Image (cartoon, one colour):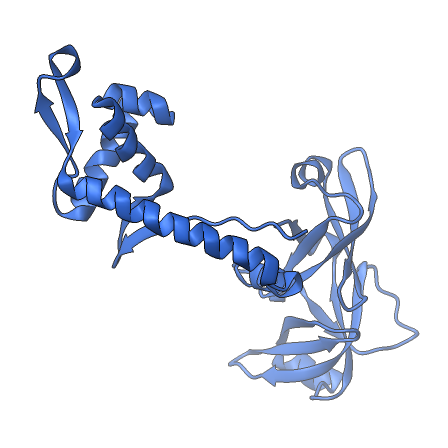
Length: 261
């Protein structure tokens, strides 16, 4: 069953007001009338609580919390009317948001949401390929992980045993492979060629983007997906690369970085 969670966060331009945690701090101050007690209630240190209050006051452009004469121990802290309104507004929005999340969980297509989640992964690596762990061959130091892509292609990665454990990798676990375009070699299919690189993915040249010295060559992989490579202009001519021509994306297992969502 699809389970969704979400949270509301206030932002004004480039300034962050905060979200659930800071509203909880404000509410605790209103309840206890003491920064010390409020900080303890929400699991913050006294200093962290005041830092959060200062940030909220600055973001709001007016005081949300102010010291009050009297109170517990001869002095205390109280919320301003603005802070009270802010808490009430947040709770109203949160209630509506929770109703929306509940509705989304019953109506949304799980597969579509999974694709959207993948869109949020941002890295500097040109190639980002999603799949499922098919097998892990454990070694004394390094593990060899085979990732089966959605299109049927398999990618092999060599990572440390510690990294595999940290990522929680196991057969059936969803993961993604990152490969820099500069780490990908491009070749042409030749049954006589013998290569030591573990990953040799067949595809077709989809496009060639010329550069001053090198070009970006993008291959459409057999079974789906694409891989980009940086190839010197001279190599493109030597290999006879052109759109629509068959080619191989070649890269070492040690060049593949794995990640999980």
